[in-house]
Length: 407
Image (cartoon, rainbow, N blue to C red; front, side, top):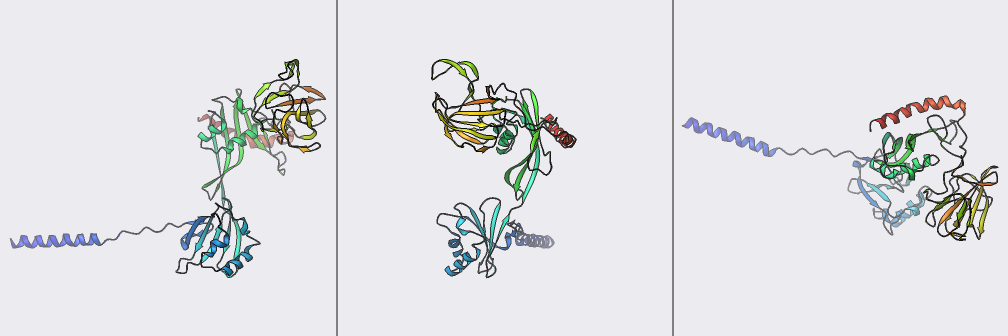
């Protein structure tokens, strides 16, 4: 019996010691994650992040960091040539890095005027220094494909792509495709590069490398190519090396709504009689921008009772165009203008029953139907560049087609 009691006591002592040991084990503290930003290891500082508020100034912000009025005045005087403190704007973010000791002395003030650039004011020495810096940018390339389901921007959004790619593609294809006439189910593929700040913050579309769109049952490819590698100008060509850019845009408005076509006999809604209509009417809300369909020189800009406010542009010895019924004229006679430049705003001046632009087209001094005219392209690819283009284009086309085949 004594032996049993002795064993029981020993067991209880062992259990008690084990429990004491368990109770004495302290949780291991996880190491603080290392954080870098603006080129600094933020763990080495006390960090204050904030935004510029109403009535804030650079001086009022740093004055709160144990700096007297004279010190603030001297600092502003020293940095004014490299950092205009008056340009600090409400809502913009700033960061202050303070020492981690008891003094909590201001070491750096960082101001971000936009998401890419920032200013660093260094307070460590008696003479404040300013450096303007830019966050690192990375580029990520990808190829996507899909089918139109609604507008192009809606479809791209569903593919997880920024809406800005839609406007880029519309700009590439504006001579070849009327996206308002695209059909649900039309296929497309596009290879493009996106920009990221600090490898994480999205900063938009950088460039398009290749694309195709189905339009009226045909694939229309687009590949950017410099005929002269030293040129800044880039044109887009199809897979056969034919330039996509036409000498003329398809229409003077981005959205196309034809309400009256070129006709030898049309009942005039204002004059109430049958007469020739020597143009194409595009309806749009008042104030809609009107673009010149080609580069040229403004030949006329003014007002007549029938045309209302109008502009006539001479493009070369063969072609001229005219734009009627404007609410505003934005160019002057003799002015050189570029293709796609806004020259006026839609209105209903002159003989018009509602807001629209009457688009008229001259060839060799005679008014013709722009919709039936086979309009010239821009300068074709030089034959000597064709082999280089084919070598460049072939792998891009193969990538587009292979990704599209997986859908």
